[in-house]
Structures are given as C-alpha cells and as structure tokens.
Length: 268
Image 1 (cartoon, helix red, strand yellow):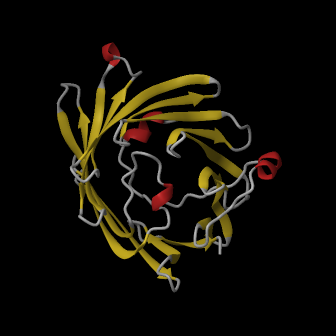
Image 2 (cartoon, rainbow, N blue to C red):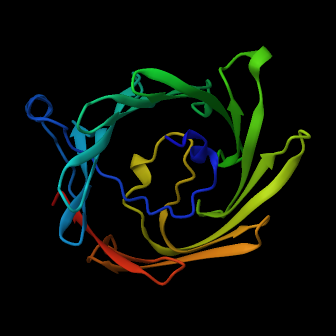
Image 3 (cartoon, one colour):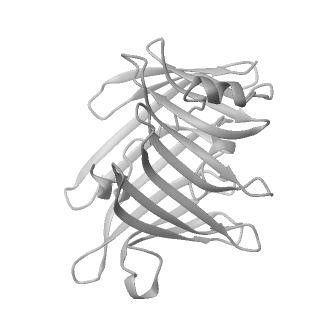
C-alpha cells in the first residue's frame, strides 16, 4: 500500500463516484429515497463503475466496482452529525470488508471545516496517520489545505505539504498550487494545476466530501505542470447533456491520447 501517494497531486479528477449497499443485508436496511435528477450510477463500457446509496435524502455510501468482473473493489461509508454534515468517512475493502482508512472531520462555529484526521491501515495494522487543516477566503471558499504527518499532537506536528487554491466568483476552482516541504523545512512548488469548466450543473457537487475543492460546473480541461520534472499532463473532457443541462456522458482524454466514455444514470 503506497500511502504517501495519497498526498501527491491528483492528475485526474473525474469525480466519478457513486453509492450503493455492499451486501444484501445493507440493501434491505437502507431504502433509498432519491430526488428527481439525483445521479445514481456511473457506467464505463456498459459495466457498472460506481453507484450511489442514500439514507433518505442523504448520501450514505459509495461503492467502487471492477468493470471487468463486476466485483466490489472498495466502498466508503459516511457518518453525519445532527446538522447533516459528514463527520466521518471510512473506506473498506470490498471482498473482506477490511478497514482501509478513516477520516474524521471537525467544524468551527461558522460551519467551516477546520481539520480532518486521517488513519490508514494495512490489514488490521495502523500503518500511517496524518491530518489536514483548512483555510478559507472572505467568501467562505477553500483557500488553503495543509497536510501534516503523524497524529494531531503539538509535539508530533510535521508539515508535509500544502495546496493553495484560486477560485472564481462563480465558485469554480481554476488553479491549484501544491507545495512540498523539503529536508531543509523549506516549501518548494511541486505542481500547478489549471482547470477550466463548462456552464452546466456538476451533478457531484452536493456529494463532495468535506474539504474537497469541488466546483459547481463540470471540468472540461485540466493541465498539471510538475515543476521538478518540467513535465505537463493535460486532460480534456467533453459531455453530452439532457434537457436540463445535466451531463449524460463524459468522454475523458488522457495525456497519452487514450479516450474513455462514462455514462451517467439519474434516479428519474
């Protein structure tokens, strides 16, 4: 398990997530009550990739499937507080239901996320811990996310990296700059990602985990420059839409020119 890779920049953010129960018992105990227009499944090459599961109107679980075998690879479950905010997310292996990771989220009195504590497991053994802090601009948009290695204790703090965000007045995150702390405790610019968007509704916006730089519109292009290697990775995305302007399909083209199309299914 390459846990530290979780703190490197994501080169491809499809936002393709979906939720459903992981076994028969959970399917019977949770009766989805989906609003019209809520995304319910993502298909890849006519096979199920992910699917949403709801408890009432609240997203409760996301399952990830192997598109070739149809097997459940992993799933995330969410716990919420009395205000409906996600306060804990847990990731499990699909076959064994073994806990892989946990995140606990803390909010301030203004309802802003201030901290998330993370733990990663290998089998039943705790392998790595970290936590993140969050800062916001005057419009309550995410401005900075900092990652610390170790437990949330003052004598163990060790800043590993941080990301700064630029956001447009419409809420779209147009640029992300990730800095990595080197052995001399100096921040070095690791990568710069520049994004552009369409003007249609992003159906994943309301399902984003706390602390995610999720935009209200759909990503159409993303370019990441890795400054140390001076390499640039470019992705493009095109969509078809329904009469409401919601995306029906997304075709993603990776830097090597490979193209893949995903189909979005909605509850209506």
